[in-house]
Length: 63
Image (cartoon, rainbow, N blue to C red; front, side, top):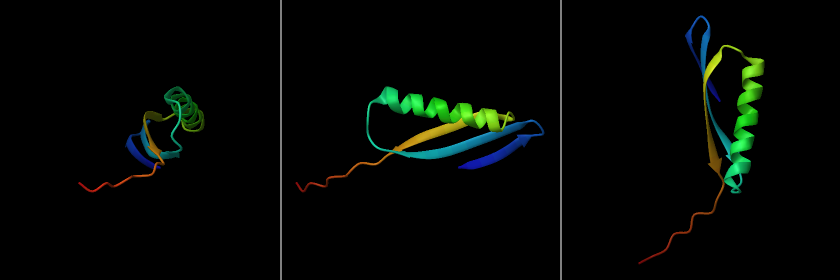
C-alpha cells in the first residue's frame, strides 16, 4: 500500500490486494469494504485505487 499527500487535506492511497480467483461480485464487495475501512481510518483519503492481484497459475504452452 502506498500513500501520497496531495495537499493539506487530500491523500491518495494505492494498493494491490492479493486474492484468489472467484466471483467478481465477491471481489468487488471486498474492495468496497476495504475502501470503507480506509475512509473511516483516514478521512483525508479522497482518492483510493485498489487493484485485485488474482493468484492464478500461468500455463505456458509451446507451439
